[in-house]
Amino acid sequence: MPRWSPDAALRLEAAATLLFERQGYAGTTVPQIAAEAGLTTRTFFRHFSDKRDVLFLRDREFPQAVREFVESVPPESDGAATVRAGLSAACRELQGWRRVIARRRAIIRSEPALHERDLLQSHHLGRAIEESLHRRGIDPRQSHTLAALAVTCFDLAMVRWLEGPAELLLDDALTAVWNDMRDCLRS
Image: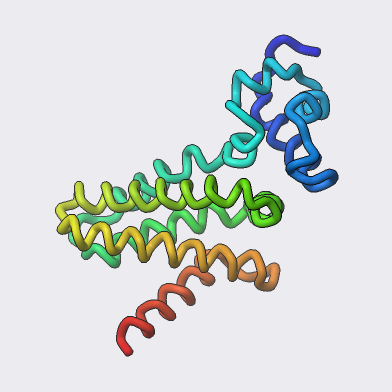
């Protein structure tokens, strides 16, 4: 087995996903994941603290990316428009990852031990949005509320997108959820 591999984390992620789908999350061990990837267990632990981490590899950068999208919105935009534009940019970035995201979500949904970690990722996303809005001068209470609504809308849009027809765009799903939320708040 190679001592060093520049794509080790991605290989481990692919191997873990395959094994989790094949034999379940609980039935898969770290040594099995490493062997499937053609790497050592030691290499696994250089990249991940445990087998849960391998499912959340891509989520490490997502809050930072959304923060950058939100901060790139013109400064004259109000809080809601800023959040909507930032999430829209994130949706466009994720559009090509539908199959990967669907596989990962199916594994997470099938394993109660992973739900807490998934919720933590949503929390980190909300904090990133809230901090970005606050830095733009938006009132802290409004920033907190908008961030919570943004995360909820994004999560609902993700479900619609993954369960919807193949031609559905994530940004279109987000627009529909955003409009639903706005209509609910008006009534």
